[in-house]
Image 1 (cartoon, rainbow, N blue to C red):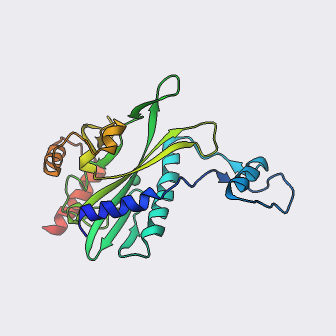
Image 2 (cartoon, helix red, strand yellow; image 1 turned 135 degrees about the horizontal axis):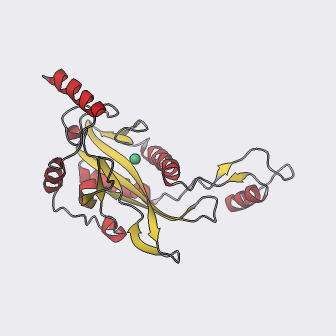
Image 3 (tube, rainbow, N blue to C red; image 1 turned 120 degrees about the vertical axis):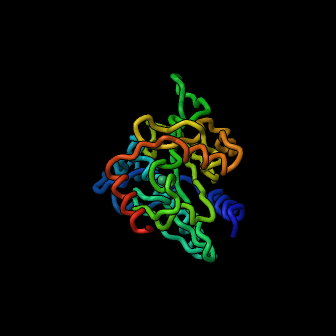
Length: 252
Ligand SMILES: [Ca+2]
């Protein structure tokens, strides 16, 4: 399997995804038993009316985590029985999901972004903030070392693939999410020349949603992308430096 086939396969799978987490189920409730539902829509209407729903969190990081877990579960269910082997990553590690296709490994990472809306509540065509593609100062900067929280050195992957989840915040609904959109793209192809944080060592994607859909980042090739961002003067804090020294000592 090459990167193009891997992306096609994931696009097929993701095309079938409909946003699933509708609310948090609350025990107790206030309705008569037995509760009989005629359809899925009827069930959720009755659970809402019967006081069984708590809204999902609207805080971006908390909501993003719920979305990520749901999307990784779905991809694992859909691909799990087929030609590839899948392993879920650790919470703060990279990637969120590793796909082994006959000894060729692909890093699959899920990224969640809220659409930016104007004062009247209409989408502006941009993400609320730049999607973070990578932390710049660790595994990305030193791609031949095996960093904590990773399965293998970054450079050992046959490809890196992002599942980009876009949504519009709807404070009035328990699911909080409307117009959910799932893109399968290569990170270098949606990358910008700007950081996604002024305080953290993050490199960012373009914030224009049509450019994300079209893989129209600011680089012409992966080589141009990697050489640009590996030249960036990333700050290395004490903890990262200690880990780096240990890893370098181990390969010396
Ligand atoms: Ca992620």
